Image (cartoon, each protein chain N blue to C red):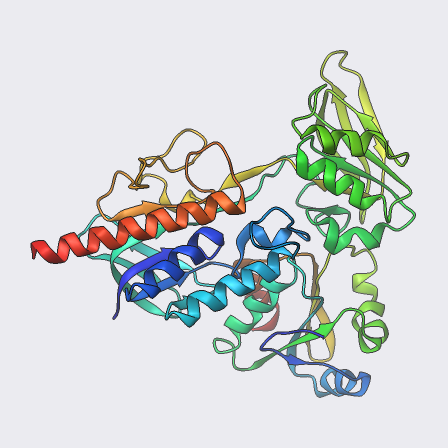
Length: 310
Length: 114
C-alpha cells in the first residue's frame, strides 16, 4: 500500500503546478498520468504568451514544470492505467495496473482534454496515413502536396499557415461562414496565397485506399457534395475533456466537464478539479496553472482541517 | 538525438543482427516531438512487463533509420510520426504510424509477440 497526502490525476500544466505547490508545502504528493508529462501543452511548438517566458516549446515548458515538481518531492507515475478507484471514502484509493494500490487523503483531478474527433468514416483508419493532429510533427510528409485543414479556430488557422511552409496548397474546411479565431489569425490565413477556404461545410468522410486521397464535405446551405482531393488532412476542431473514467462518479455537465465551485471543490468531499477537464470558459496554459495553484492550496487546507478535527 | 530511457539502435549492423537473431523486438522510430514522446514512454513502461521482448528507439533523421525502418515496405504509406515496427522471428509482424497509447501497444504485443 502506497499512502500519499494527495494524488493528482494528470500531469499537464494544472497537475504539475498542483504538484509543485503541494510538495513544496511538504505534502506527500503523487502525480499519475496515463501518458507523458505535459498533456496538450506538448502539442504547442511555440509558446510566446506565457508570462516570464519569451518563447519556448510547450514540451520544454512541461519538462521544466516536471523538474520543479520532482525537485520539491513529488513522485510521478507515467503510463499508469487506473483499474479501480474509490473517491467517496475518507481515504481515497486507486488500483493501478502493474503498480498496486495507492491511497490519499485528497485528490485533484487534472486529467485535461484530448483533440476532438469528427467521428466520421476514415478518420481512425487513416490516422498516420494522411490524417494528423500535429502540423509540427507531420507537416514535412506533405511537402509539395495538397492538404486540408479542418476547423476554424485559432489552432486551425495558425497551423494552416504553418503548413504552407511545406504544402503546395492548403484548403481550410470549416463548418461555419465565420471563423472563431482571433482577427490577426484570420487575417494571416486570408493573406496567405497558398490557402483557400471552403466554408459552411459538414465534413462527412475521409476517402482513400491505403492512404487518404480526398475529404468529402456537404455544403450546409445548398446540400452540394464537395470532394476536396488531398493527400493529407489535419483536424483542429477543439478538445473534449478526459473525464470518461469519472462518469457516474462525479458531477459533470452535458459536455463531460467536471463542475466545481470557486475553490475548485467538486461534489465529493476531498476531491478537487483543475485545468481543461473542468467546466470553464477559457482554456490556456495560464488558466490551467492558476487552477492547479488554487486546487492545491484548497486541498492542503482540506487536509489540515481534517487532521485538526481528528 | 533522442532523450529516452530505451536502448537505441544506432547502426545498420546492430539492426541486422537483431533481425537475424529472430528475437522479439519493437522499434519506435521518431523524434522528440509530441506524438513520439508518449510512445517512448509506453515502451519504457512495458519493458519490465514483457522481459522476453526488447524495446528500442531510433532517431528518425539518422542514416540507420533511412536504411532500415524507413525503407521497409510496411511503412510505405506512413506519414505520421513515430513509425513503430514490431519484429518476431526475423519478420515484421506489425507496424503503426503516429501516436499510440499503452492499450493499443499492448494489444499488438499480446496478439503478435506473445
